[in-house]
Image 1 (cartoon, rainbow, N blue to C red):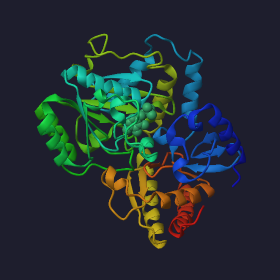
Image 2 (image 1 turned 90 degrees about the horizontal axis):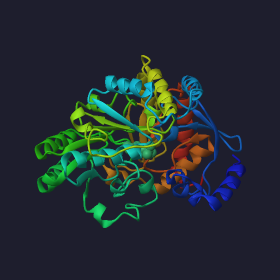
Image 3 (image 1 turned 90 degrees about the vertical axis):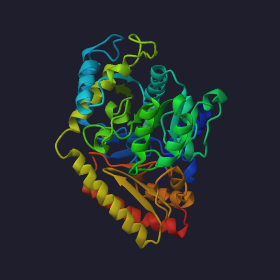
Length: 434
Ligand SMILES: *Cc1c(COP(=O)(O)O)cnc(C)c1O
């Protein structure tokens, strides 16, 4: 597969853009290819690169696209709304409609605010928790990714971990002093840290089901420990559902798991492929936000009509009966097929899956937290990745990122993927360069 044009674009890009990429997760540094693939077009489950090669896409913009690329319903909504202005700088009806829609889908939301990214939403949710409780400390979990604001970049997952960066430079000690990071799925650590610091803790922030060091569901007792200790100490619980909301059913994962957080953070899918973030919860908490209360948040593009129209259109499509069941069925076929192919090729893998989201870790140990996820053999993954790419399958260039099945994938796509994976596992086993 020739990727000459991508190479040339990258050579230009590195002269103007740090590392040639606008998000480090897109760098191919961790997979042993000297330049990332520059994509030109996305349609349905496929991407086409600058050289015209076609790829079956499992990155789905890191989970933002649950309908696949350029879905007609989203495009139509966008065209219509853009004709009336892309940003109005005033309140408008779509904000109200979207808020009503989210509230009907997620019962824990009484009021919501729209911002422009998951990063902004988490950043503000933390400020809100601190403002509402009058406390400073934040408890979070190693490897969970919550965007790139200062407090959550300490021991962060996703792109930061791929590049071997546990803590970003540029975060003052004063910020770090108020962040307590403990292992995911460790109820004992939750109880211990809350015993010691509970009175000073504003919030426990968690991905209720992890999507950022692979797909890692909560073990029995873990979320219970979070909610019990938080309510005992007067701390709030923040669920970061940027990956999980609307991915597994037309609502949030909290209602499947049976918990009600104080603040919920949303993003990715709810923007229908445009930038968005949102946070919400009971009025008693949300009314601390300006102009009602003293916790400040604003933004020129917050609630812009484009993101809301695209998001609403996407949320309508995924409410069609059977939508998530179909993703679950294709996810299951991938899970079993990948496991069997790896076994035939003698490669030890852990395939974790929830619905249409899954992850493949090259390790013989079950993956239940960041430490076990990190045991994935990076060299074997890199060989697997290169062989998949050569066969036209686009995965994220990281041992930590999940695969996302979208509404645009078909059974034929899954079958093609499994055949490709057989050869890619063989390459991973042989230590051959793909
Ligand atoms: C992607 C992600 C974020 C950050 O969202 P952006 O829109 O990229 O800023 C936050 N939390 C989780 C769980 C995410 O997966």
